[in-house]
Structures are given as structure tokens and as C-alpha cells.
Amino acid sequence: MTSRNRPHLTWSRLGIGISVGLVLFGAIDAALPRSTRPVTQFSGVGPHEIHASAIATTTTPVVSEQNSAAQQVAEEFVEATDTTDPTHQQGDTAERAALAPALTVPQRVTWPEAWVAEDRRTTVVLDAPGSVVPVESGQVAVIVTGRMVVTTDIGQTSEVPVDERVTLRPTGPSGSPNASHWVITDVGSGS
Image (tube, rainbow, N blue to C red; front, side, top):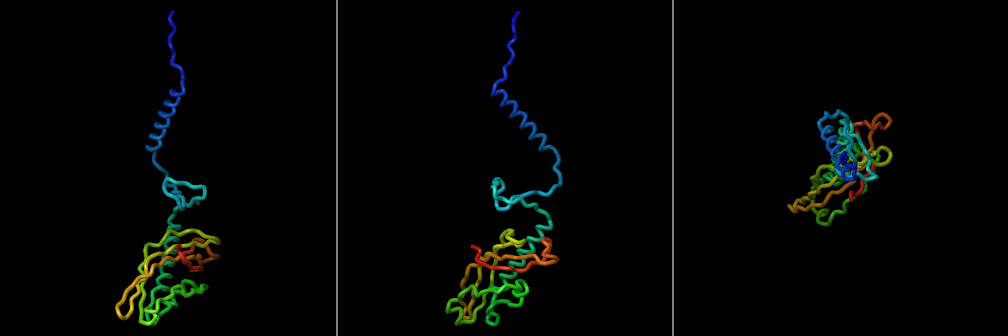
């Protein structure tokens, strides 16, 4: 009588079996249809980085709409504040007051003597607004960057960088986070 050699289970054979099983599982999972659940993304991290401090947020049309509204209000505020002419040296104060009713805006820019001596006009050219970042008490912050083009009546043109962090609060019933209107509560340097 001869005895048959039976294959022995080794670590390498076990590893190969597990690998084949995982590949088959991945192929089956990829072939199945996906559900229509909202996509969860992590704020502040790249697509392959997950940090312990990352905040999970669900992307929905309402949140996207809110973010766009906050970004638009932040841009309108910077334009109203930084776009000036000889008759409106402080910018569009009526629009600024409507967007930031409780905010006292300090004089942020110290104009060079040549700009003060000559009639000047400033116009802002803004980049796409930064992401909406949640801050305390239901407020959000938006970084607005770009440049302010300064033109004097004698034809000199120069540029000043714009880099502002605009903090906004939603308005509406009880400060509802679903509000589509925002007011400015603070402005500071974006850096």
C-alpha cells in the first residue's frame, strides 16, 4: 500500500487563498449597482487623506446652495467696500450697511499720498471665492482673494492685493441653518 501525499496548509498557501478571495470580492462589489445615498466627503483633506481632525459633511443640494449664497454675499461685501471713486471714497456704504448691518468696518487701507492727492478710483477683480468653512455659533467664513486696481485721474494705475476673511451668519427664522440670506459679522485678513 502506498500513502498519498496530501498538500499541507502553509502560510503562503493561506495568503494566496485570502488574496484570491479579496480580488473576487472586489470584482463582485464593483459589478453591483450603487445606491443613491448622498456622498460623504471630508472637509480640508485630499481624496486619499483622512486625518483624525477631518469633519465629515454630507453634500446635498441645500448645503451647496447655502455655500454659494454665503460666497456671493462675501464677494458683494468686498466689492462694495473696496470699489471707490472720488465721490464715494469709502465705497458703497449703503450696500455695505445692508450686507453687514451690525458691523463697523475700520479703515483698512492706508492710501499712499499720491492716491489721496489725486482723484482715484478703485475696482476689485476677485478670484473665485474660497470654500465655506464652519466656525463657531453656526457662522461660516469665506476667504476672498484677488486684486484692487487703483487708477488716478492722471492715468497712473497700480494694484493692491485683496485677501480678506469674511465671517457670515445666516438670517431667517431663529437663525435657521437653511436660511438663504447671510449677513457679515466680521472681516479680517485672510492670511
